[in-house]
Length: 97
Image 1 (cartoon, rainbow, N blue to C red):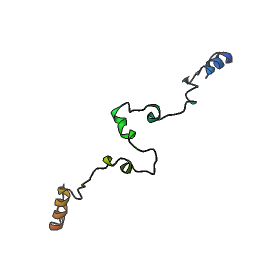
Image 2: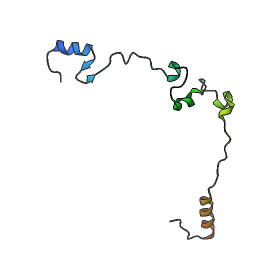
Image 3: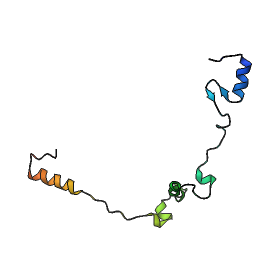
Image 4: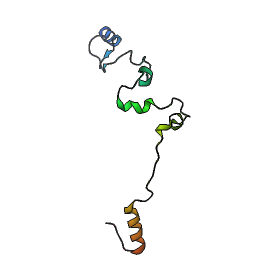
């Protein structure tokens, strides 16, 4: 609901002040830019990871920067899983809880 006459409401709408609160008319016209496009170096340490990624999505980062790749040694079964599996085989009435 608009209070007052129409001319005051139109002038307020021109400046971006309406009954909905302040609305920036220039905000929609701005082109969104990534931090990498506006700065040459990362501003925070959290941004350093994304700074080293290649721009081409088809290219893997490990091929561009080999030092990124790390060797992985996954644990297929934890000791607790092995224990529960062994107890289930030896004792049919075994319950963990």
